[in-house]
Length: 458
Image (cartoon, rainbow, N blue to C red; front, side):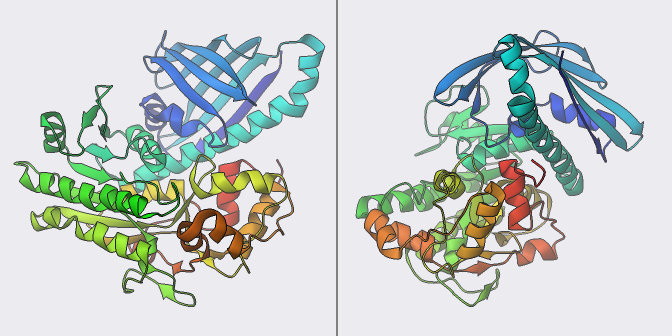
C-alpha cells in the first residue's frame, strides 16, 4: 500500500500544538486556498467517532468525502479514516512527538490506496503524491506560522465578536482566532442559524446586544465589495451605507453598553491615500482625493461614538489582499494560467498588497497591543503592476506579457476598474513595523508561492 509521510519541527510544546489542531477552525486553516473543498456536515471535533463530510470538486464534478476520527490519544495523536470518498483506502495518522519541553515534531502519516487498480497506481506518482506534497507543505507552514503568531502576541483567551464573518477575511479570521483559543461570535445580517451567531444589522436586537455586552473585543469587517459591480449612483450609495451607516450604528450601540468591549478593530482601506505616484505613504500621510479616499475617511469618522465612549479604536487600512480563495488574485488567475496575463497599462502603477495571513496577524496585533488609530496593513515591499505580473507568471511558469489597456478596463468596468487598477500608491506599514510586527510574507514571490502551493521544486 502507498504511504505518504511528512514531518515538521515546531517551536511550541506538544500540548499547545495538539490543542491548536483540536480547536474549531483548525480544518479550515489547513485547507489550501487553491483547493475547492468545503464542509457539508460536522459532528464533533477530532475525538473518537467524530464525523466530517466534505465536498471536493474534481473539475465540475462534486465528490463527497466522509471521514470518521479514531485513535484519539491527547496530546499524542488522532486519526481520521475515510468511510466514503475518492480513495479505496485512506487512514491519516496525526502524531505529536515531544522533542523537549518547548519543541514538537508533527508527523502526518497517510496509509492510502487508489481505485482502478493499475491505472490508479500509475496516477499515484504523477498526480496524487505531488498534490499531497503541495498540500502538506502548505499545512505545515500554516501550522507553524499560526502558532508562532499566537505565541508572539501572547493574547490570553478573549470573547471576540466579528461582523462580516462570512466574508473572505472574516471566514479566515474566525478560524484563525478560534484555533488560538478565543471564543468567536459571528454577527450576521440574516436570521442566526448557529449557536455562535447573532443578528446585528440594520439595528442590533436583544441577542446581538447581549453578545456585544459579553465581548472583550469587536472586529468590524462588514462592507459591500468595492469591486462588486460598476460604480453607478446606486452602488456608490450601497458602498457608503454598508461602511459608514453600519459603522455608525455599531459604534453607537457599543457606546451605549453597560459593559463595553475594550477594543473595536474597524476595517478601512489603503485607498484612503488616493492616487499618489512617487510618494512613500505612512500613517502620518494626509488622505488623498477621489471616491475611495472620501469613502474611507467617512468610514473611519463613523466610529467616533465608540472612541468618545472610551473604547480603543483601531483602523486597519488594508491594501490589496492576496489569496486564490477570492478577491483580486482569484480574478487574475484564469488569465495567467492560460498564459495571457500581464501588467495593467504601462505597468508603472504601484500596488500595495498584503497576504491574507498577514491581515489576520495584524488583527491579532491590534487586539493584543495598546495601539489606536490608523494602521497600514500592507506588505513592506509594494510592487509595480509589471513586477507583480512578472512574478506571478514566474511562479505559475507561464508567460505574463499581455498588457491590459486602460481603454478596455474603462469600457468594461468604468470608474471602478480604472480606480482600482490604475491608482498608484506606495503604502508602507510603518506603525506595524515600529511596533515589532513581523510579516509572515514580506515579499511578493514568497507570498504567491505559499498561497498557490508553487514552490521552486514543485
